[in-house]
Amino acid sequence: MSSNGSVIKRTLGLTGVTINAMALIAPGAFLWVTYQLQAANADGSGADMWTGIVAALVVAFLTAFAFAELARRYPDSGSGSAYYFAEKAFLDREQAPHRRWTRLVKFITGWASHLFHWVYPGVMVAFMATLITYLLGQFGIVLPVAGQVGVAILFSILVGTLAVRGISGSTTLSIVVNIIQLTTLILFSVLAIHFRNTNPLNAGAESWFHPDGLSIIRPHNLGGLLFQATIGIMLLVGFESSTALAAEAKFPKRDIPRAVILSLIIQGVFAYLFQYFAANYALGSWLGADAAGRGIAAAAASSAPIGDMAITIGDTLLGGNGFALMLILAFSVGVAILATTLAAMNTAVRISFAMAQDDEMPEIMGLLHGKYATPYMGVVAMVIVSAIIGSVGVLGGVVTLTGVTLASNLGTFILYGIICGVTFVAFAGKPEFNRLRHGALPVVGLIANGVMVLALLLIGLASGGTTAQSTLLALGISVAWLLISLAYFVINSRSKGKPIVPPISAIHNGTRN
Image (tube, rainbow, N blue to C red):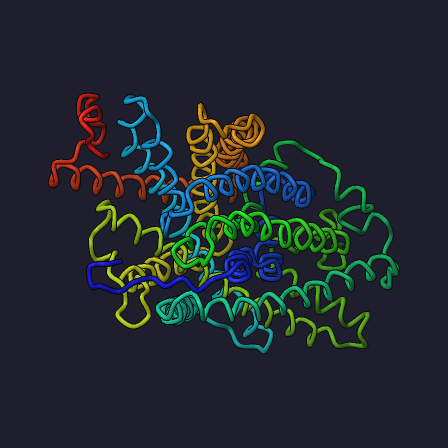
C-alpha cells in the first residue's frame, strides 16, 4: 500500500505472469531490431551470432534457476523482485556479520536493477524510432533527426499512458502480440530456409555468409562468441520480470517460479534459435554488393536488414510480394516493441516503488494512482528517462544505439550475477539446501555473469572502431548512473541517520538495516 491509500490488486494467474515475461522477451521484434547491431561489430564476430545466443541462453538459464528458487522461497516479495531477495537473503542469516551488510547489498542490487530496467525501455524507444524511420524511407519519406527524436518522445508518452492503466490491460495486449509475432516469425524463418535451399538466385557456395548450416552452429572465435553473447542477452531478458509481479499474482509461490522458466524456454530456446538460424542461413552477398563480406556488411549498414531480406525473399518466392511481406513483419515488430516497452516500464516502476516503500528512493516514487493502483509518478519519471535515452539512441545511429543497449546489458549481467550470489547466501546452511540447485548452479551462474561483464568491457574496448565507441558510451552511462545513485544513497543515509554498514552491536540489538 502507498501513502495515498491505494492497493495493488492480485489479478494474474500463471498465464498472466508468464505472458508479461514473454512480452519483454519479444522474439519477433528482436530479430529485426538487433540483427544490425550484431552484424556491425568491428571485431567481425558476426559469424558467431547463433553460438553467441546459445552462450547467452546458458547464462540466462543459470540465472533463471536462481530467480525461480528465490521466488519460491520468498513468495511475499511484492514488487521488489531482486531488491527484496537481496534483503531477505542477508536478513535471514543468523550470523551478525552477514546481516550488517544487508543495506549495502540492497543498494548495489538496486543500482544494477535500475541500470538494467530503466535503460532498457529507452532502448526500445530508440528501436521504435528507427523502425518508423525505415518504414517511412520505404515510401520515399526521409525523416530528419529532429523528427526521429520527436517520434521517440511521443512513443515514450504513449507507452507511459498505457502503463498507468496497469498490468491487467497489458496482459491482454501481450497475448495478442505474442500470437502475432510468433506467427510472422515462423513465416519468415520458413521462407528464409526455403530461399537458401532452393537457391533461386543460382548463387555459388562462396556467395553465402555461412557456407552451410553447420557453420552457423559451430563456434568460430571465442572472443567473438562472448561479445555476441553480451548483445544477445538483450534478446532473452524478461524472464525475471515475473518476479516483480508477486503483489499482483494470485498464487505467487506456485506460478512465478514456473513463469520464470517457461517464458525463457518458449521464446529463448524455440523462437530465437530457430529464427537466427534461418536468417543467418539465408544471408548472402545478394543482400548487398559486398562479395568479401557475403552480405554481413550490407546487414550492418542497413537500419533494418531483416526488412531488406524480407523484400528480396518475398519477391523471389511469393510472386513479387516482398514489400507486402516486409510490411507484415514490420507491423508485428511494431506491436511487439510496444508490448515490450510497456512490460519493461511496468517492471521498472514496480522495483522503484518497492525501493521507495523501503525509504531508499524518494517518497514520490511510492505514490499509487487512485483509480488504477499503479505507481504513476514512477511512470512519469520513466517516460522522461526513456525519451532521453531513446533520443540518444537515434542521434548517433548504430554507435549510440549499440552503446545504450550495452549499458542496459551491463546492468543485466551485474544484476544476474548478484542474484546468483544471493541464492547461495539464501540457502547455504539451511535444511532445504540442495547442492545442485542452491550450490553448484548459482556459483557457476555468478562466474558466468562475471565473465560476461569482462567480455563486454574488455573485448568491446579492444575491438576498436565503432564497437569501442559504443562500449565507452555504455561504460559512461553506467558510471554516471552509479555516481547519481551513490550520491543519493549517501545523502539520504546521512539525513535520516541510517548507517550504510551498521556496527555489529546494532545488529545484536535487533536493528533492521
